Image (tube, rainbow, N blue to C red; front, side, top):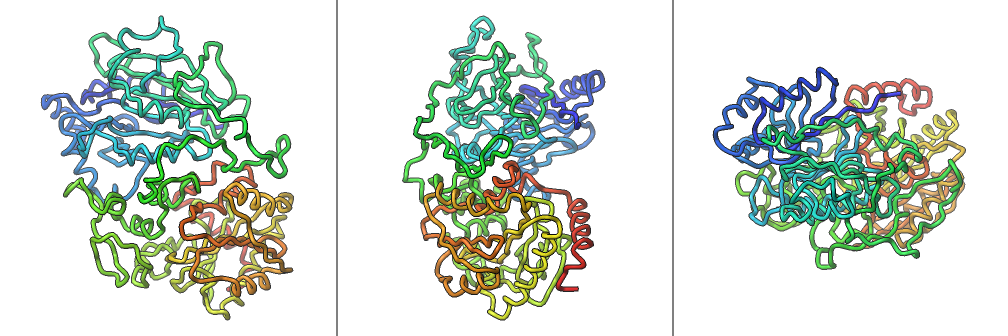
Length: 607
């Protein structure tokens, strides 16, 4: 069994890096090794006197003993150092697992979620402020992104904030609460709302100048408890604890009994503003739900109160724009725009896409021009149909420098096959048109012969392994390059595929139309005759030939990862619903692709 990761937590560093690193090295030697150090509260010095010591680490003259992550991006020297960090080539785009500042030091910028040695870590960088400063404060978009993350499946292990949440001492043992903390004006009500939604197992904060480990408390609509920990500054005069070690087993690997365990000193939640779900919001029965065979479906959650009014519908959803997947689905009050998503992939500034302007000025590290339909740059906010010129930057075009060629498993005349990046299951395959076209239904009709041959080969290959195959495609009318997804499912679960897709549709408020046929070839022929190119469409080809289709209306909020999430539920692998949770190294991907090619060789129609 893999041992639980060992993590050090630290309060405000205040630029005292020599003292911090000396202590970490000592603890690491006596009680380690530790996997990472997570710092909350102000990380940079209070005065210019501390910059020389700080710059020794930035320049590489001194080193951090273990990987160190911080969210307190404020203090003397922060703007200059972090501005230079943002411009580094390796720190471009949305990097939720930290921007590298120097050896073993990473800045967790904005807000986000990443996996650290199996632990799910969520963070909010900066402090609450109306000053509009580029560094040191969090924005409304950062908070909105975390509210969206709170709707994702799975339990968050660690939540990092700089400021304490207001009300955290409510219902606590008053004798253990440090003097002056319970009524402090420095606490943040926004963080209280976020932590009540996110429900982490550990919440860590700094800035208050004292050490405080609150009793565990229960969460509304969750079975696990949360532990809050406030840490003191490094080198504080009162010698209060500024570093603390934890070794939590990742929630994703824990049993239900372990998750539900509550220590004897557990209290009620201190956040009284959270409302309980009403009895009418109880979960619906899921197909095949019984004992150990219970199935997960992420839309089967109680309705939470909405924090945004309808007036937000014109603003872009940060989660969808940055990752292509919004867990709120139809509940999201923000706009899911695929063209904005494509511009984001090219590195365009989110503020420019969302508001039409960027207020960060020349220090912003992202692009401030869009590509119009002729492939030329434009600063206006206009998301037109992608042009063929954009194939130069397309992940799927074989001529593109961005194509992941090590994942390709076979190339035909009109289609090539590749393993999916961040696969739902090990042999998750994509069938991709060689030509830069928006969907497989737009391909010339004679190309269907080759596609059918590839599909039949994959079905035969997986059938020999005791599996059935599900094919699905999300047809955006403005999509840039088609890919038909191929997911093998154990034959023992194949009978539940249709039921769980229909249940998911019901949860989202629509009903699939059904195309009955005895094989995929005939089903696709009927699908092509019914497809209206002016509309977006989701369809899934089930084992046996039946096809379920849904025309997505212009203003309908349809989850971009719908097919994957439903199958993750069927396979009881909720943590794999988001492809980013399944990312592998290039070496692992290459080995996986070579293994698949060798096993598939006898079935490969392109031999």
